[in-house]
Amino acid sequence: MPLPICGAFVFNFIIDRNKKNCHDIWHIHIKFCKLKFNLAKTFRKENPHLHKIGNIMKLNPTTEQFVLHWGEMGNKWGVNRTVAQIHALLYLVGKPMNAEEICDTLGVARSNVSNSIKELQGLNLVQTTHIMGDRRDYFITGTDVWELAKTVIEERYRRELAPTVTFLDELMQSPEFQQENEEVQQRIKDTHQFVDTLTSWATEMLKLSTSTLSKILKLGASVQKLLK
Image (tube, rainbow, N blue to C red; front, side, top):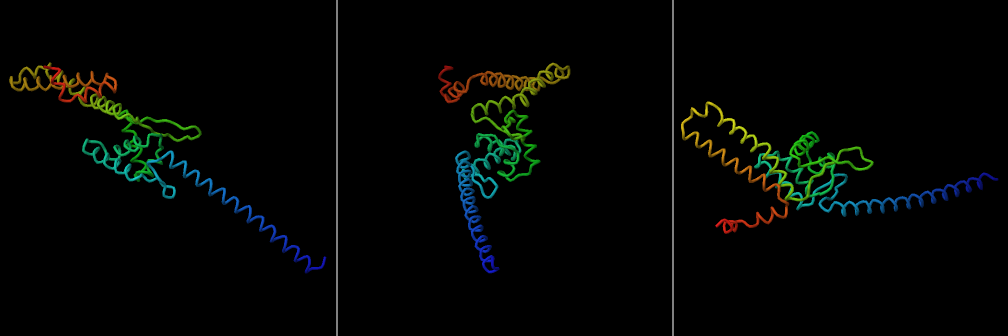
């Protein structure tokens, strides 16, 4: 085959081959775009409270305001701000999240998230779970606000009120107590009676179902009529 004809044949072969490659690449690109669109659609459907900017999950405005406010309220209740924010986030999301997702969403350090989760687990407000095929730990919390409130009361009773009742019992039985003047003794006895009554009432209330407890609390001032 003459050289010019051979060159033309090779050139046409290369052109045809490139056209085929371009065509294949274009189809791959279209499929990739469709896949990306479907993944984004699925993400929005499963996570209505979040949206993505790049690879970072961002909270929607209402969710963000709730989480930030809960963090501020946590500070006033004597709870670390990040602890309160993480619990609010898990409560609103209503699905398991791993530590990396929590870090990215709230913009806090991994060490801070780890310590906060440990504290929430100590309060029995967050549990660890796992997802098939993923070795990471995921974290969830309850979505029933009444049950969460009961859990908080139970834990605060265990940590604060129960030790106080025990302390006052021991104090009143000590020899030193008998040496105090009557006014001091009476005030300590009054304090013991108040705390003991409060804890007994709280214990009984926590035994009730959520629906019953809700009805009792909604009675409000009308409870007075039942006592007359």
